[in-house]
Length: 550
Image (cartoon, rainbow, N blue to C red; front, side, top):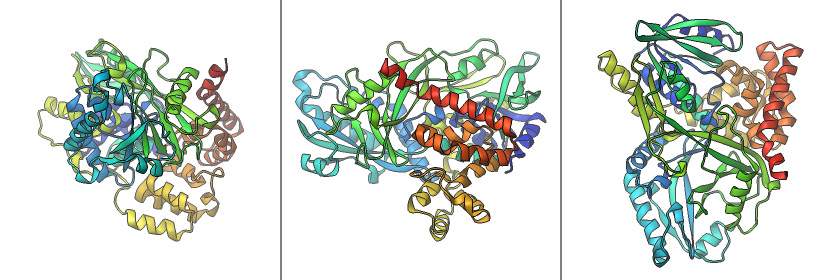
């Protein structure tokens, strides 16, 4: 795909589709893939860049949801573990098993978020083991069953943990994945099945044929041009913006409560272990983790009701203090703000079927059909995107009166086939080991396309900044194959440099801007505008430093 294909995608969507998907996060991408693989003519539009919202701001996990087990959300856990197993099989380049260590300390009052009366606290490890046994039963994967660790084993394997009061640990398994790369793999697979997708294309109104919704008015935000799209079915897969889109018809059939989850990115070496650690308890019953990601660790997450700007959720100084304080209760070497190289917050869209704190609400999804026929998929979480998409397209098929069975349960995602060939080619190219791993785990077999760019222009094999595996070729690839259109697309969403380390991002931004200018035809004035927009966003994302200092 070339840069011009964005215009081609817009033109294809403008000619009319059978299914128009609004939203280019993981859910919308999943719906586009499911519908296209069933034979529907599909168009997808996204108001910003793909995965620019919640789908890039997760804890980087594909998981069943251990926190929902004691809350009684058994169906949600069962579905999450089933989908986790499928993704491990269908996207082996992107989704990898990850062990989680649950340290057991004497006197825990809220292990895994469950308050325990004092007379039962000595039996807390047994209760956790019973819960993990249920988790294993739902997962049906003997290779990922939980295990026990003695105190001596924990001290050897995870020396970061404080030894005082440590009784041992339990180990269970989930999986890790880069949320943005997973979204792009689903989009690429959808395009391979004929879907047309376009970013920076915002729906401004719904188009009607009598009482029936028959398409939408779309604005190309890069050119300002507006056009109408005819469609037999329109799907609202906009996540946290679901109510706003549903209100175009004219009243939502559901309510969404928003919850903010904040995360901190820790510098290399701040913690030494390779496994994920579960913070065994918090004062308010939330669940937090220290998770390895991109050569660093992510500490998160919080869970707070949110009614602020959906387009710009920010980590506050209070969020930083909360996460550092709870982690430091169990770490031998305390973490400080100097260990934090980045921070990000995401908004969860929770279907408002319950009152009370958002931290005890489940992540169930719901398909709602408005009187005019707008199909909204709301709630859910990243791990369950495929099941959410299946239910959504099942609703389309029911209204269509046809029998088009879902195919995605066994459909490999783009880049998953040919991994050994790609691994051998990357090794033969002489790239550093960390670059080989990075490219393979980001693109899978499509890393051969990135490698081809390097061979055609050897300078593109260079790192964008020392200490990070991201290469110049990936910026070119993002422009040519993934419709990267703004400097922030590459800085925050493709290379992730601005998320991992703001200082490193600043060191690389000139190189990235030059590469994108050459690909997209930016003149000096446009480069300056792009730089200013990037700096504004970087300052917003770093505002926690100011609020914490006050």
